[in-house]
Picture 1 (cartoon, rainbow, N blue to C red):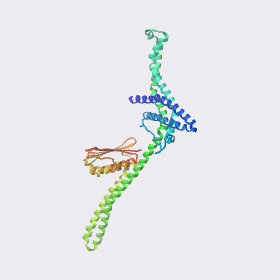
Picture 2 (cartoon, rainbow, N blue to C red; picture 1 turned 30 degrees about the horizontal axis):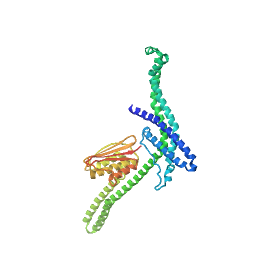
Picture 3 (spheres, rainbow, N blue to C red; picture 1 turned 90 degrees about the horizontal axis):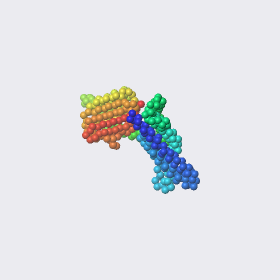
Picture 4 (tube, rainbow, N blue to C red; picture 1 turned 45 degrees about the vertical axis):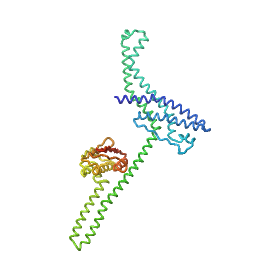
Length: 415
């Protein structure tokens, strides 16, 4: 109930208080536009147009502030095109004319007047009707006494007419009171929808484009880092083992005729090295896309990771469905890399992993009781995790004070 009342009051303030501002903005911009266009041929109108656009920008900023309350969205202000460096005085004066958003602000100041007027009238009527109906017993009593010149004790015994009228108007007031939140909300949304389209639509689109560009850059960076890490791991591990294995086999070949027993021992050592190399290659492949993840999904893959962890892991997976491959890979990689960091740096005795599925996202929480100090600064392992999650529109949060515990929370949108 409290939130409903607050919503109605915010919408009412928007339509009632915003209307005078809209009226002033409509008058100022219309007069300024007419004067600027009419005198543009003698160049006086150009600065007038620029000043009109700046005024429209001020009214637009006020509207954007109200929109955040009505639409329950954070305020979004578009980026206006600045004057070029070293521009002259006249160029700086006329700079608003070169910004497309400035003209959208001007257009909004003009076309916003009709819906603002309609919203204002609807809000006033929707408040006046229930107030009039609910207070009828009071002012009806007073007006009847004045019109009929009846004393108050006599008025109280007038009969059923006054009582029936009071019941009727109070019931009507209650009906309009029930309708009031929906009507006021609808009137506010109609006006706010126009404001959002003209005043923040371009900015929201630009933000989305920037987010997509950042996500693409993050994906490229994450893949490049993963490839470099894989190349380094292969060079330092399996490649060295394969070189050593080739040398062992060459030595066994030379020993085969001279000393068969020594050759047998060398072959035994080579077979053991081969198995170790295969195990290391399997471990590296798990960091890319393990077969168990592709075949059976996140829950079994995370269980396999927990089983191989050096640090004891308490696993709680409440997301048993299948998701897009990019989402599953991102979550798996975050868990695998985090468990590696926990084993190497945290000095933890236990690690807790929880994965849940909300309405539209996978929420992953990893907690360890180690020494803390983890962060997502560049040059640290967690920075790569943040980039990988950003590539699938996910977010990573790390809380790791010195002395611990470390809490890593990731949220990945999913269908």
